Amino acid sequence: MTNDFRMSYFMPPIAPIKDEHGQLVTPPTLIPCCEVSVEQVFQMITGNKNLKVLTEQVRNSEDIRTAKASLLPYVTPCGTFSRRSSKCLIDPSLLTVVDIDYLTSYQEAVEMRKTLFNDPLLHPVLTFISPSGRGVKAFIPYNHLPMADDANCITEKMKLAMLYTVMIYGTGTPPPFGEKKKGVDFSGKDIVRSCFLCHDPGALFRATNE
Image 1 (cartoon, rainbow, N blue to C red):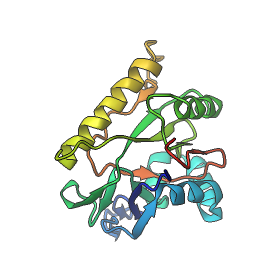
Image 2: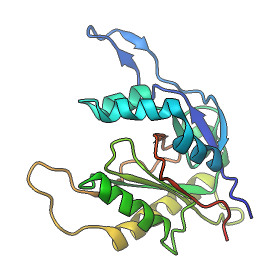
Image 3: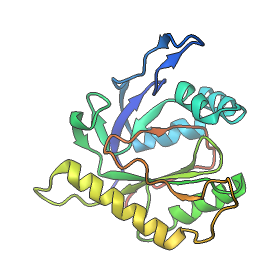
């Protein structure tokens, strides 16, 4: 069966852009531009020339966090929304997302991208390297229980995927003083959790769920 998971696609910025005086220059994007499939996301991150340029700008920026928020498009992997709000879910995608952040190098991210993709239980449909170049994002499918509340189901599946990833791939070694600990990002468990898209020619995609 073809993996046709669908989600909302938003143009940047994800947060308001202000000038040096604190005056609003560009408001955040709250309404999706369109709806996309996970395969279209894969095609964008592997082949879109404009996204490649934007990704290079982000990685060369002194402030990657601010740069990605203002430059990169993003999706809501958990489903389609009429507005970027957990109250505005249209349809769940039957995907959840796991982020592993603060890896020591781009090469470690390359290895983790493949490791997660090959995990027999997670069985992601898509894994790719994050905008920083030192993290990996995995879009993970799940089975929806009949009559289950969509929002609660998504949240629970996300928690389970995160906990499993920590158990199998987490590190128990404390980071050097002043450095952030690599591992799963638990900060975004909202169903409208956004995921920045960035260029990754080596992204891994599973065309079918077999």
